[in-house]
Image (cartoon, rainbow, N blue to C red; front, side, top):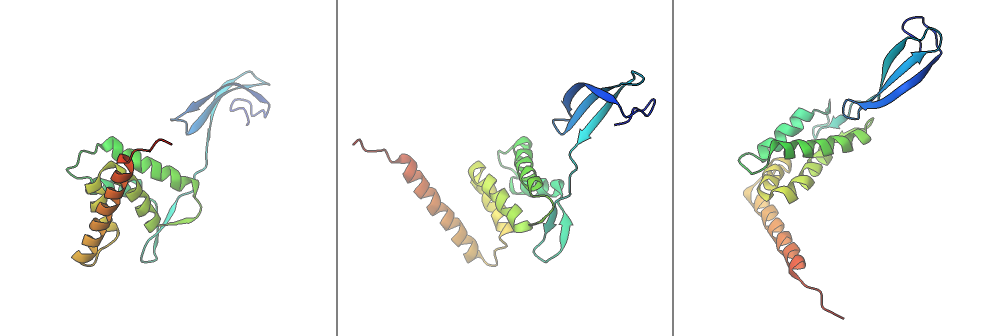
Length: 165
């Protein structure tokens, strides 16, 4: 790092702090030659996440598109925008760890469903109906029946008490 005042390469770090919500490191530096203090920022170089669509096309990941899809599924449900953005944050963080490769849109859909299911069953069903692209009412009914059956099994497991030995 060269001093902006005298262009000397020798300097020392005086103070280091995280900045911008932990996404950057702010460093105060002092030039060894002229004593000028200056600030530098370090950022992680982010590679854009590419999404492979069903039709074979590729596009850059769009957080606003993800939030819009989740909001549509959660319309008129008791789910706050904060919760929706939390889901988007989790998914975006997961995807950013896999950056540099193409992520299938089906994987993103599964991640949304996985997070909506414990939050709100109606929103989960709404999202699944669009995501899974049911072709007729019978397919949709099978999905709902399967979900009800899994719900009953989970309820039975919770309600069962352990027998003493």
